[in-house]
Image 1 (spheres, one colour):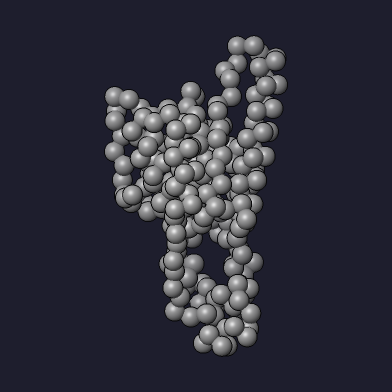
Image 2 (image 1 turned 120 degrees about the horizontal axis):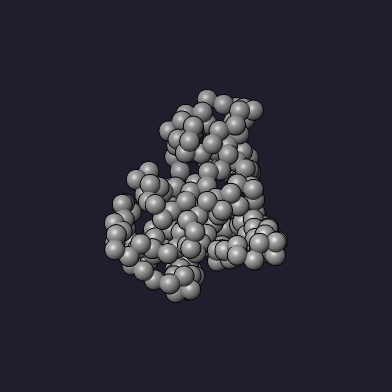
Length: 208
């Protein structure tokens, strides 16, 4: 699996649009891929709201984390925002949406709500206007991962889209490799894990 720009075959434009959220921590150049839509999460710091990747980059986040006494909180993309991105998808394209673990984020459930609401709206329109185009096929995947681990799955799915794989095959392929992905990280200090509630004060003191 590689990280970086993906070249598309101009003669055979992909028929699938991939959607994820900003917690996939993708490189900035990859976010420019025309076959990818990235929904930003919002971050609240000291009562101020920021949009991840729009007016808040990692460097700024870590700087504020060191300077503030309260711990930042995040909010997942709403069903309305996800639905708006689904509706912007080019006509005739199918959608594969890959989101962070449903055990850690509400994003996946919001995507389910957006998909179902969109289908109901489209069915209502078609009943009034029989010539209305059918709703796009939307497949949702719970990555069961977060951060760069999920980002690796996004890159893999994009590669397969660029190669012209059909949606069902890509979904099966990604589902098969999800259990094989492992993520490891190290921290310089336990302070932020304690502030965020991941560990208690006793573990923080003993670990330090």
